[in-house]
View 1: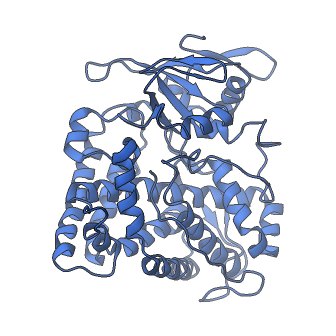
View 2: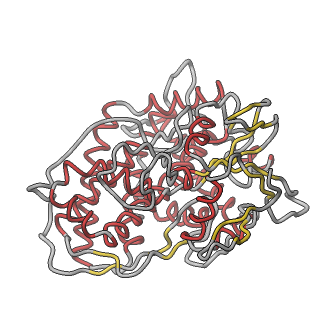
View 3: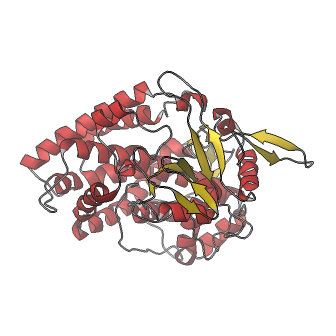
Length: 451
């Protein structure tokens, strides 16, 4: 086993040290990170790294990096061995944080996770899903109406962020008067306040972020109490009045679920949409193919955007017992990190993995997780949002394109886009949904939310 660091090949064949446990690694350009992961995938066993920095609040501890597609999938689908508890994120939530906010779906296993997920899943009735699908189209149309009228120059703030935020607020039944305050808290909780934060800062306890989460959860808990007394036809009402084996979501569970939707659901879809415009701009032949026959290629385009950009870089797991996988022995209590960003470029699964190809088939990426009980609940709605928005954009504002590379936020957790400059050539086609080869599509599946 390699201790602490590995050697990654660089041009000229000279090795260069890279350490996944060092926050400065996540400040490197994506191309260098990809090169380091490609090197790791060629090794015979997972490598061990130590997290930094050590402090009186959080001592150093190590993790094994799972970088191959097969390993990520196996760990994802063996939750009795690779557990999400006590925490799937890096760093793991402190005990006092879990006591204050409760455990999120992403951080629990077994019967507790099954029960919570059953309550959430059954709250998404056919009526709620049908209304949400129609709403997604309406939101996409409204956003593109504004794009044509205002010609904004930042795609993230004007388009990519608005789509998932408005859809989730409509789905949950958040009153218009509450939305500006919730959006402000989401931005504070995610650290996306417009002030650059280094990768090192993201390894520290996010005091402002926790206060923002507390405020946001308090707002939603208040709404939950109101909807118990006076239910309406929205998801909050369904969640707090559900009777699944005699249980509904408590106020704290509702707040935790809503935080997951807002911080995880909004950001992942936002980032996928932003990366999507960048990829379609940099690959005009793929964009032309999509425009030529949207119905045929839309599904493949959304899957390839998610694979290529991988909005969530990694989640972690804790070994509940000794386990042997692909010839490597893990011990009970070991920490492993599932690097989805690396698995999605695994050469043994994806031919020419760095290419952006909307016709790629099969495309068994792990952008929504590697399967198992924690597979993303929001897969379907996220894809519907992307398809609806790009249908409108490509039909009604065909000249919209990125003018610069996206400005990324250094992070070991998500592939976050802070801003993406954009411009327009030609003219739009007015209001309403486009027609012709960009005709409608529909369907129904799971609801939003990573779990």
